[in-house]
Length: 330
Image 1 (tube, rainbow, N blue to C red):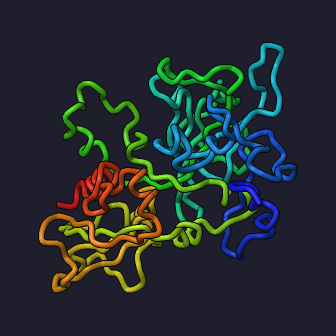
Image 2 (cartoon, helix red, strand yellow):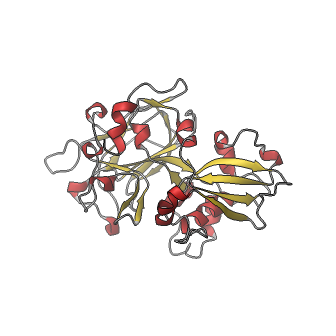
Image 3 (cartoon, rainbow, N blue to C red):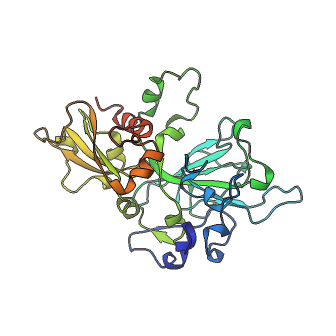
C-alpha cells in the first residue's frame, strides 16, 4: 500500500463522535483516489513523492510543509480550471493577492470551531474569489479560488506543473513580529505577512486529515509521535498554550508554572506541554535546553535541522521555533 492517501481505503470510515467534517480542497473526486500518484503533482524531479509532506525535496535535503495537488481539468491555454474549496468550516484569516513570495497568491483560513483551532493554507492560486475578504465566515466546501501556479521568479512554476499547495497546522506565536524585528536581516527581508509568515506556521501532514470525511483534529495532533523534548523557563505562559490548551498535559496549571517540558514532532511542531512548578528539578539552568531524543527519529531530526549531526545540540529549526515560542514570555 502506498504512502499518503493510500490510507484512504481504511480511513474513509466515519470519524469519531467529536469530529470536524472535511472535504477535499479541489475539484478532484476524493472517492476515486487510491494512492498518492492519483493526486500528487511532482516537482521537476518527476517523483510523485516530491508532492508529499516531509523531507521529500532535493534528495531528502529540503522540507515540504504541505501537499501539492494536481489539476484534473485545463482550459484551451493549458491552465488549470479546478476550483479550490474550503477543507472545513472556518473564517478567512489572511489573503495575499501579491506575488511577493514563493506561495504566490494564497489564502489562510482559521478554524476556531474545530477540536483544535488549526489553520489551513491554499497557495499558488491563479485567482481568489472577488468578494472574499478577511473575516468572512465560510462553510466547508465553499469556493474560494481557482488553482494556479503563481509564485516569484526564483521559484517559478511552469504551466505543466500547476497545482494547489495545501497545508494544515498551528501558529507558533502571536508575538512573531517582535521576534522577527530582532533578526539581523530584517531590513533586507521585511515581514510582509504578519503572524502568517511561514516561519511562524508549524504544519503537520495533511493527508491523514484529507483522507477522511471527518476527523478529530486534537486527537490527530496528540497522536503524532514525540521525537525530542526541550525544557524552558518562562515568567509568563507562552501564548501558544493559551491558543491551544488542549495540547497541555493533564494537571498542567499555567498560572503556577515556572517553565515547561515541551515535546516536539520530528518536523518541529510542539505537540505536548507539561507545566513545571518552581521546585521542579527539570527546569533548565538557562532559558531553555534540549533534553530528550527519540533515537527512532534521529535521521529525520538531523535532516530537518532540528538537531546537529551528532545529536548533541539543537540546530537551526529547533532554535528558531523555540525562540519564537518564547517571545513575550520573559
